Length: 227
Ligand code: DX5
Ligand code: ZN
Image (cartoon, rainbow, N blue to C red; front, side, top):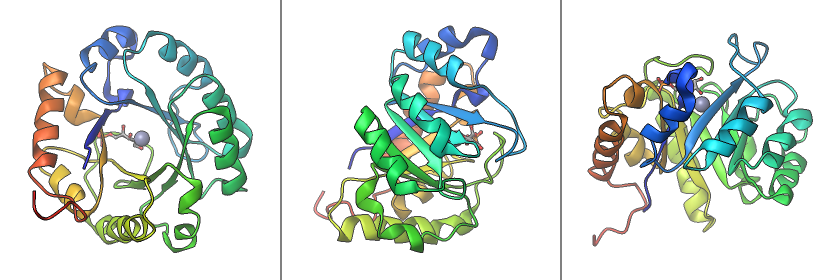
């Protein structure tokens, strides 16, 4: 089972982003939070920033769109070269056609679920996606506490992916630390976003390594038993 650690630059020094990207080069992807002050009550940056990050980042971009009307805005992020583009189920008008469009452009398509959003309506759509993001905090701000009540939903999605024999990455985002990452790994996550846990330390690479070690110490619910 591959474990991916995706640091969120929401918690980085925005005045020195190229330098910050260099400090997380041992991570798998860089998580880029796009907030529009409508879908969530906070504002970050948009396409122009992503185009520039794409030029200087040593690792691929994992774009998380916390915006209204992703049907209209998401494809441009794929065209900018993002490795994956994840939009919110609650905001999308036509999630399947949007996912197909993102894949057609060449990005991995992701769908995100807020903590209160039921996964049931989306389980039949799993083949249309490369990634499901189960939010483990209310989207909008870094540094919040992990919501444990989201774990049964994560496990249900993990079981559905496994039962269907799909290769869909399961991402968690919000409150991921060396203490909580194992809980999410056991519930079925393989891709872990961490903002403050990576950047609120002197050496982000050490934080990335310790998150990786903590995840590995907790076997995934569908990991082969004989290992
Ligand atoms: C929250 C964002 C997260 C955020 C996570 O809405 O989607 O990606 O950066 O921050 P931490 O890891 O500090 O909870
Ligand atoms: Zn995020």
